[in-house]
Amino acid sequence: MEMVECSLAATLAPRPLPGRARKAPPRPAVLAAGRARLQVRSARREQPPPPAPVRDASSGTERSGRALGQAAAGLAAAAVVSLTGFAGDVSPLPAPPARAESLTVAFPVAKAREVNRVQRTLVEAWGLIRETFVDPTFNHQDWDQKLQQTMVEMFPLKSADAAYGKISGMLSTLGDPFTRIISPAEYQSFRIGSDGNVQGVGVFINREPSSGRLLVMDCIQGGPADRAGIHEGDELVEIDGKSVSGLDGEAAAQRLRGRVGTTVKVKLLDGTDNDRGGRIRQKEVQLSREIINLSPLSTTIISHRSDNGHECKTGYVRLASFSQTAAAEMENAVKRMEDEGVESYILDLRNNPGGLVKAGLDVAQIWLDGDETLVNTIDREGNVLPINMIQGHSLTHDPLVVLVNEGSASASEILAGALHDNGRAILVGHRTFGKGKIQSVTELDDGSALFISVAKYLSPALHEIDQVGIQPDIQCSPDILSLPRAPSLRENGEASSLEMDSCIMVAEQALEIEQTKGSAS
Image 1 (cartoon, one colour):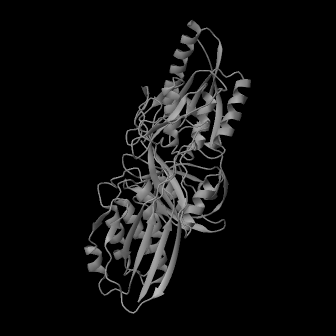
Image 2 (cartoon, helix red, strand yellow):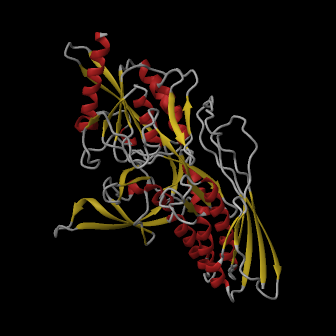
Image 3 (spheres, one colour):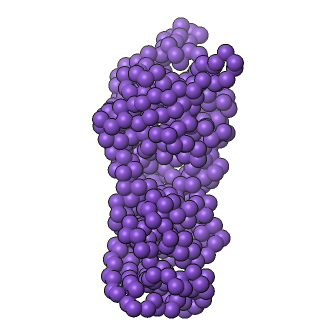
């Protein structure tokens, strides 16, 4: 029989002392997760050891390993895991010494080598969740027992894919769709996509909140999807023969990405054409993956004359995602439009699913002055930490309207909340998605990545974002698909398609009112 000892070592960062306020960092801080290390030592034994009890060293309590013992009886092997706790910390300031806690768990070791490796990944993921997940009750379940249960379920499996499915199933019990594990290949795709370039098919996908359908929002002009006749409004139903049911936009996008020169087959429901019988026509196309150069920004200047005959210029800026280049591109765009005599701005965050939170905070500082609070974080212990600017200087003080809708999520909501709560912008549109959790991303030993919700965001005025969203000052339309779409990247510099967008017209009216107030004062 085989006896395996696993040692998962890490550090538990100190939590803030009760009643002690911590000063905000000089630069916007985002949560960074450390990396746990998993070492395994194996030895042969003639007889399996008896089931070990579960002991929580931090509390001194002991619980029976009955469920595990029953399942482990007669199995090929068992293992003992020694865990030291781990957590990240948002504050760069000096803190008290770190604490450590340990937990010992016995579990059966799978015979299949590839499954055994995933079991080790399970232990690593479980430990990170145990010490950092935003809900310390783990959705009101015994998280230690969950590890034992999942290990037992993994024992008879013969493939790594099936074993990863068990990890995903365990994470789903937390009740947080944003806490998830992705494969090594998917993680590499995720890292590539965050720098503004991606190997894929050139299509923007988002989940419709009311129905859960994955809809095409836009295609890159001349890209593989555009050449294949995929259009805005088409519904994605399969990727390489597998249903996309239950996937969000990012998960679907990761499946579409891949190495240049490879192909992917997609099945869609045509969003623009019906069969004679009234049924929605299906189409199936095979797309070649290419290097797609993305610019998250598109701009144009809207000119109109006021009642007194004065020509007014409004700068329209559409931000499609928060990549590493988003803030720098917006800064250049605003400077350019200021030089061209723009007197007001519309920042369009509709259908922007988020991206890098730091990019959202950097964009906020383009529009704000002073030491304003950009966002607040609240950890699993209820400690609130504001993230402030330090002597910020906005590029312009011209009136600003921000457009949002149900497709605006995560960093979009943080940016909209920062500009609204600090009195810098009027929000127009519809309530945002409501994704207000801070996530750490940790690359595990096998190259997979674990996304964990470790805290929540609150707006500068301490309004809840997660599952609530941000309510605009002025409603325009709750249906994000019935209106003509905002200008895509192919329409950069052209304002013609804006004329039929009712939300743009509402935004222009709000800007006229603000400009009138400014001239009167």
